Image (cartoon, rainbow, N blue to C red; front, side):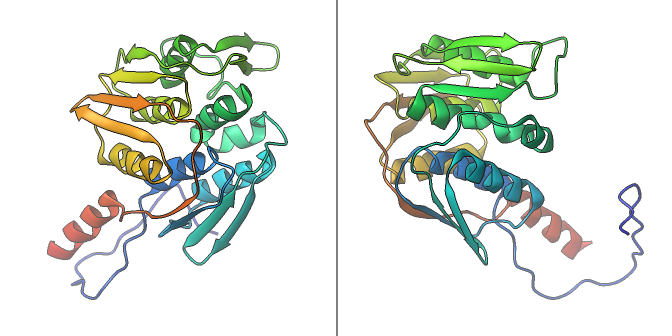
Length: 250
């Protein structure tokens, strides 16, 4: 059995050869959520075959989507949602599951998600996301008995001007995902500037969205009626590239 508590590395050996770099995990996970914004098929290439990715794919299937993985490509077709609830079991396995708030609210007007990490004191990334969604016309009730957020946007999501109190790449991405099908224009200020966010924007625009980073920390999203299917290739994981590069020069 693999001992995850300790890794022993025996060095002093020269490294040589060629390696293939996996697709970016942070882009791939958000791309799966983006694919749920349309009823049409979305194919994503160069996916990393890791546990987090598989869990997100399982969530899509539980929501009613059709998923097919072949080698390092995944096909997703989210027709009609058969449920608006993310289970506590799946949310416990991956915190990014709360990003499904965006496609659920955008397409069904409702979403029920567990409170990631349980009830904790102090601001959390999801608090900033909830705050932004409320400004877009979402009502949010937290049921402490079951630990779920019950959200509803019965009149549809509306564009808004939102300033993040603190940089959050997951919060920025979730607000972008929620805004692409919203009515009107959304302006996000103090938005995160990681390159993975710009790659998500590239994917969404290929699907028919209208998203632009107008300044380093300002992103403008003009809502559209619907998105279409597309094929998209995930870029190499920059952290993995740096890791191999450093290992190769030591």
